[in-house]
Length: 266
Ligand SMILES: *[C@@H]1O[C@H](CO)[C@@H](O)[C@H](O)[C@H]1NC(C)=O
Ligand SMILES: *[C@@H]1O[C@H](CO)[C@@H](O)[C@H](O)[C@H]1NC(C)=O
Ligand SMILES: *[C@@H]1O[C@H](CO)[C@@H](O)[C@H](O)[C@H]1NC(C)=O
Ligand SMILES: *[C@@H]1O[C@H](CO)[C@@H](O)[C@H](O)[C@H]1NC(C)=O
Ligand SMILES: *[C@@H]1O[C@H](CO)[C@@H](O)[C@H](O)[C@H]1NC(C)=O
Image 1 (cartoon, rainbow, N blue to C red):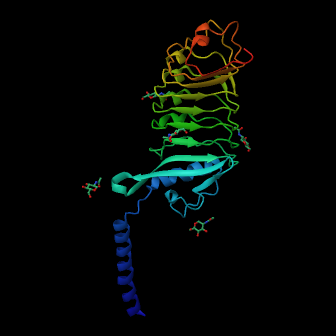
Image 2 (image 1 turned 90 degrees about the vertical axis):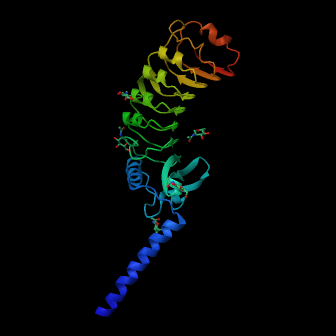
Image 3 (image 1 turned 180 degrees about the vertical axis):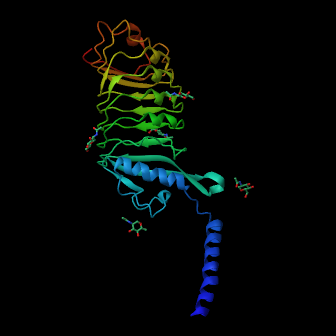
């Protein structure tokens, strides 16, 4: 019996060494523990139950990835090129049309490389957490078609890399924060079909990188509507039910570059 034990120990040691060696040699890149923990927190918050944590999240297996079927999409993407291909980082999470009925995670603190979060067409409720503003590397955020309430947190304007922010078809309310007009990279700002109130902030006149602006149900007026002359990239402007009294500012109609100007029920 004792002899067997002696034999077993070197065997275990040898196999452990071999395993480490194999991992090193074949360069199986790993997702750091704090990113795995962050994914657990996100799954709990959203009500996502089919991510299998016994399997490497970057493997593209077991609930981490499946091809889009209809409007359903499930895709977690990692970048595994760090440190000569030995470390992975989560860069994109797409969970579309999955009937998720939880709330948005308070932040992405454990995912410092996340660039894209797309939670289009679920049943997520609660509000957009101000903590999202502490992820200064986010590029695309889509929350289209959920049941979100509350206002847009001004902290989001701190995401200087943000190019696309889509919250259409929710139940958001309140005034649009003037801080949104200071986002240096924003290209698409899609805000229609919510319950926002007040006017379009004057600061929006400075969104020179914007090419698509969609909004509805604002009060506004022909005179106080911010001049958008400097928005030379603007191709689509949709102002639905915005109650702009009198004429739409003439310079908007004069814009020859504007391909798509929709202004029903002004
Ligand atoms: C998770 O993955 C492991 C390893 O492939 C598998 O044995 C287990 O059945 C999976 N669990 C679920 C719930 O799919
Ligand atoms: C990556 O590999 C190259 C060549 O093998 C080496 O010179 C370099 O120091 C490595 N870099 C890191 C970050 O490990
Ligand atoms: C952001 O979204 C656009 C449009 O879908 C896509 O082309 C781009 O690759 C996305 N960027 C990132 C960093 O995910
Ligand atoms: C979100 O929906 C759940 C039921 O799905 C409900 O219990 C909860 O009160 C809702 N939260 C908010 C903030 O509306
Ligand atoms: C934005 O970031 C700056 C520092 O970069 C910080 O001082 C400020 O409080 C942040 N604003 C918000 C609204 O989070």
